[in-house]
Image (cartoon, rainbow, N blue to C red; front, top):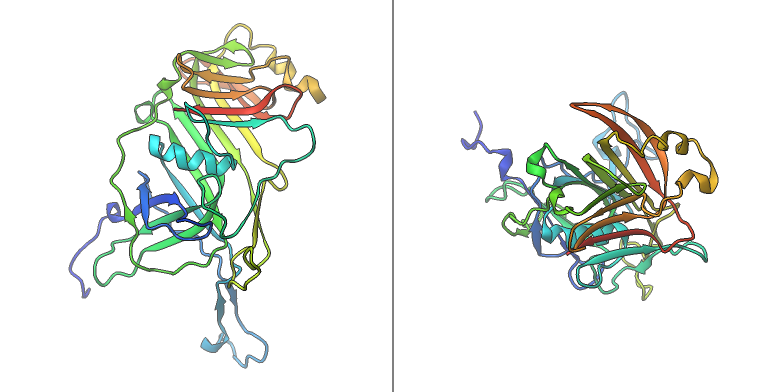
Length: 344
């Protein structure tokens, strides 16, 4: 018979995110709630070795032959949920490595003309939302349950922002992956996670322009994906003092940052030329358009803009109406910006 007669719901589980406290790699204590559909426990990449040298086990590995070591290990996090106004200010800057500026809040990635502009920063630098964040995973959390964990020094390496007019009330959803190499205090006291926000982000906020390669389109769904890897270098902080397992330096976008935009639009006049464009090479592959993707609100406070993109995939979408399904990849070019994102 179970020693505890209570049964727990998965709704007890909570996930939150916050900017690292004061310095890069220092765990936050108060978190913005993420409304998730399910909670996946982090993948802890602890170094594990069995049958170390001198082991004398027979057919089975002896208990003394298992060695587990955390310092230097990379932990990975996967979270999906509904995007809110509060989460916009945390997730989008972190995945791009670009701080939001201006009013409305804007992220701009300019064209590159003098080689790669990799973002680099050091452990224990002043904390900022475009550098590192902390994630909190709270379990049941009652007395007798040591099932909560906080992971600081996280960098979001992939984020997909998606919308479908016929699903979830038109709310924007996200799916992210993050990594950290900062050792964590496993199963500590639960983090303080705020109440769920009702400030949802809606795809209908983009109510002015819906363009695909300069052609006004009727969008059924879209998904913006930003892939921006992180490399952890070294094993000490900026003052060269020994820190068990922490990275010395973070480097973003190696080997590259990738921005893709997948969508389904009503097949219409002006889009038939994309079939041929999808087979072009070099500069011709990005079409003559200056608005490969341009989705905007009437007051310009919400915007997704990719100036030049190549067509990576194209095909029919046979739903309630004939649609065109495309996946585009943003390209560096001779224009102004590679990517611009506004949410204010």
